Image 1: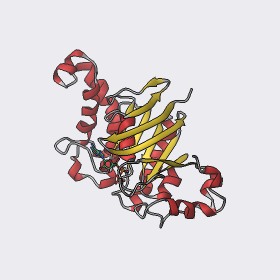
Image 2: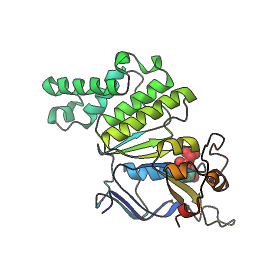
Image 3: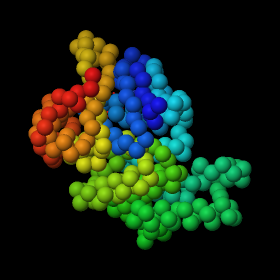
Image 4: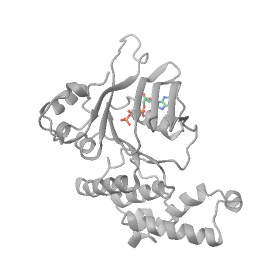
Length: 281
Ligand SMILES: Nc1ncnc2c1ncn2[C@@H]1O[C@H](COP(=O)(O)OP(=O)(O)OP(=O)(O)O)[C@@H](O)[C@H]1O
């Protein structure tokens, strides 16, 4: 049994088919990077994994059971734009993520933690801030942080609930290259140490190759010029990322043909070997 099983999954909004015929299996600990033209449905797919959107048809199973149709602590998400609370300090921002999920009756009633539960939560928060390199900034407000620090905070908020699946929607798209490189190191460390299963959308192929263990390309294979919304995107390439594929001459050209100009190919580095074997369906 696969950790995540996607079977004949479709998503449409009214007559607009966004995604069609997605069928994939993902094992625990994989790091799947998702690339594809803007508007082809990558975020919609992530939202279905998170549980805030439901599939229109098909199955989405986590450990053999249908994925819960609401977000829970098993899945954490980080978006491109900073999603932290501006009026709270760094520490409060992470604490509130604990409080929102706490199951005690008093915290459910008040949205706050008290006594020993609060002490424990604060210790957990401080340990998490240490891990993401924000301990010295615990008492600062988000507007006092750089973009990279704000994304570290968003990661801390997502990870404090100890999710098994981490969903990243272009988390580093707005960051400068140097800060991005630091974030890559951090995410790779967290992925390996926590045995997370990660799905990350990126428009940067070099990032997809540098971080992922597997690359999915979303694209439309069926088009009706009379009804552009009649068909959705599907996964057209499923490429394991290893030394051979990452150092593959043809990879850049094959993906360049497949992907739209929205994907930044200028920094992609793959050299040598072929993609033909990776073409999935
Ligand atoms: N709630 C919704 N209601 C109707 N249409 C929607 C809704 N959410 C998304 N869509 C449509 O679904 C399509 C896919 O959107 P989505 O955000 O998933 O694309 P994407 O691949 O993530 O794009 P980008 O790379 O630009 O972020 C778009 O045409 C969008 O307008």
